[in-house]
Length: 260
Ligand code: CO8
Picture 1 (tube, helix red, strand yellow):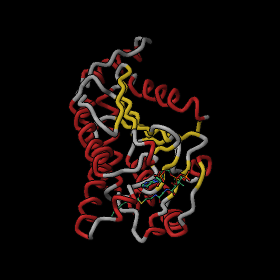
Picture 2 (cartoon, rainbow, N blue to C red):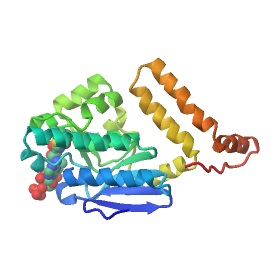
Picture 3 (tube, protein in one colour):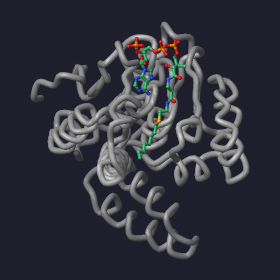
Picture 4 (tube, rainbow, N blue to C red):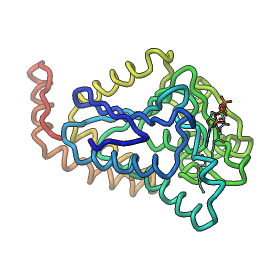
């Protein structure tokens, strides 16, 4: 990996751990963080030695939003360019061929909640806090929040959270479907690694096809989604891993998958 000024990277077997590292600003997303995230996810996509990614934050925050001090100085054109840059990063994470797990260790506000929603699965510390406070600042959740939040929690709850700007804790986030699991802060990363290892033990080609089928299907109506599913099934079905997985089941042994 290249060296980054606002990110830390660690590789543990096939698990890549990306940590946003601007704790003095609670890991707020400025242009540099967005550019570095874009670059590191390109590197991860191209790197066959990484199978699953964990995204987390250094210190007491996951990401406390887009950088308000930086945005304050932007004119409308610069603001739009910044928004597009943020949206592109979220899109890159969402469409990565590998699974990305958000390990939400603290504040996930505004752009922080939005980047967690671009990840495939959200695990949260009991200390995590979620919210979309943008309308307090005269802007909208413009890193995909108006679109991904209703898809996760439903239209009414998304409007409630965005219009009220209420900050909610991890358990409430779990109750509304914004978070999948909640853990004590000290075991969050350990649990994220365990989940990553579980995912890594499955056929990678099938996991990647499931991710694409779910994402593409949610962007379409049901018949189109079902057609995506049929298309997505073809490659895993034709793979050696399918022969291996089915053979292993019938021979009552663990499968040894080979696909990337
Ligand atoms: N941007 C810049 N700096 C920040 C941010 C942020 N989002 N959040 C915190 N910081 C900085 C603080 O300014 C402070 O810096 P300093 O020490 O130099 O004063 C430092 O981090 C520590 O923060 P606090 O002292 O405020 O810590 P507290 O524990 O008292 O409070 C909070 C923590 C509650 C998280 C508080 O910092 C807060 O409310 N932060 C802002 C949260 C917010 O409003 N986030 C949404 C931002 S807007 C956004 O994300 C839009 C995305 C789409 C953009 C579309 C563009 C068009």
